[in-house]
Length: 153
Image (cartoon, rainbow, N blue to C red; front, top):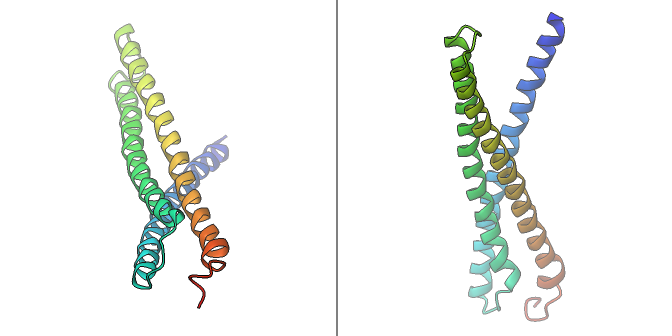
């Protein structure tokens, strides 16, 4: 039984690590995407080339991805705070919970589940915004920029 508990703990730590890596990737890739969009707009402007709608949409999508990711971090913190309060209540009562304590734990649990749902939705939406921004950029440079006669000299 102890080895199963240790394995479970390791799995939980690995899940947490993976989520942290995804958050860093979203921030890094989106930051690079914003920079890339700004440089592309600068290049197009300097060369008197019309800036396509796709570049103007990709940048804000990357910004949105970062904002949503930061919000998800905040809600994730609030979720953990509620879980901490659940544990603290149980520790204070030495696992012998009165009806008031059960109500308190139920309140914390309800809030924790709400924050978890919001966090998950924000993470998914952040990832989707980042991927959409990337797809739009790739689409632009593969199918519009290279094909447009006014760009190719």
